[in-house]
Image 1 (cartoon, helix red, strand yellow):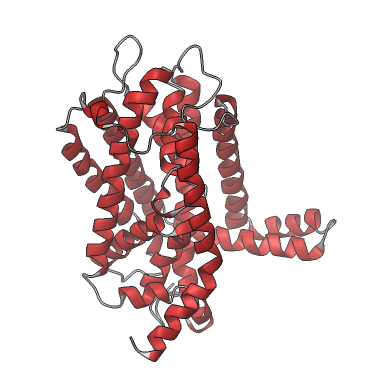
Image 2: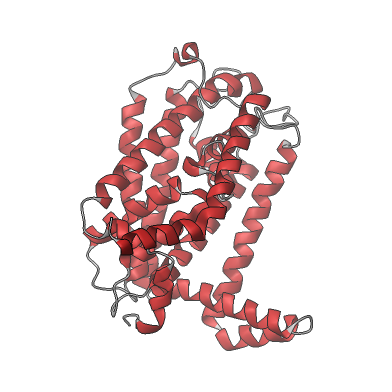
Length: 377
């Protein structure tokens, strides 16, 4: 390793040492909590006896398909700031980014895609990051509204248990349902706010400065600046073609995701007390609950957070004894397919091009180049 590379490596570790230590603490806490409260991360071998094993490789195909649309749809968000980036590079960078989001603690991986895509004089880190922000906002709103609708129209288990299976007694079903609706309200409010900033910028800025300026002028200016930055992520809405393309492929991505989760749930033996199989609406609800749960920054691999999200979703729709046994198998298989497959795809993509590792390590310094880079109009 050269002196420059060693310096960059030490600088990266120094900047994120606190988060990494925090990740170790969170991981240890999750493992202790799982053992203490009965959350089965790895079910006993006899629990797998009823699995329809052919559904596992078929689910792998679902993951591959949904990963393609999850990655490829980014091109619609990049057309204004990076119109000349080939789809192959977008796919490669996206796959590396997805693996980084999964493996790095506290969502540090969110910086990887912008860092790898930036190109001095062509694509700035800020412009690429803006497209990621737009993607996150739309995904959060999309997923939370799917979950909210599912909670309203899909019949829940009766009687509804007071506590979530495998989690501390403080985690009640009422709190979980409340969190789901709160997430929907939060993303709805955020989307409306930045949409107003996007379509009526001057009015929105004046209103922010007037309202929050009563408390603190500095706070009002900071809020206005952040809202403007977030609003930049919605630039794709100016093009009906890009907006329609992004929403269409996002719908395919989430629909395939739910269909794959439904198949694997059935293959794992997850069913109701009367023996009826899991349905697609319940799969959408579980997908939504998992999605809003993993918004919580957590340890590498989302270990424990992933399983907690699945148990939250399953407890609402299936009897406790079935969740504790078949549900544990389902959560394990879902995790055991998604994590290795996402990691493998990211590793292959990373080493199939040049400069990947150095760009990732240099993610934070990339922000400093923004003043020198002019986004492509």
